[in-house]
Length: 67
Image (cartoon, rainbow, N blue to C red):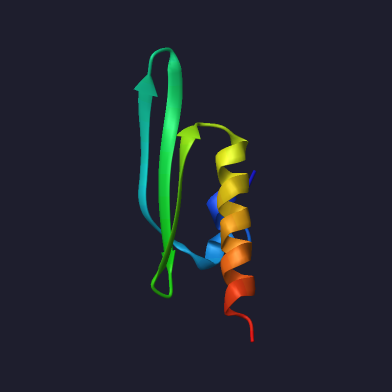
């Protein structure tokens, strides 16, 4: 299985921070990624949804930059 950060469009971004931590009985994840001076970040439960939210932010940024 390919890690989510190695699939398009997230593979165009650089990870500048990725930390796991615990709160109560849950495990959380913080991820920050940069590309061309733009930063996207997400924080929350360590599940596939955090990567889905980052994917949507990367796609939105790509569309914002299109002519």
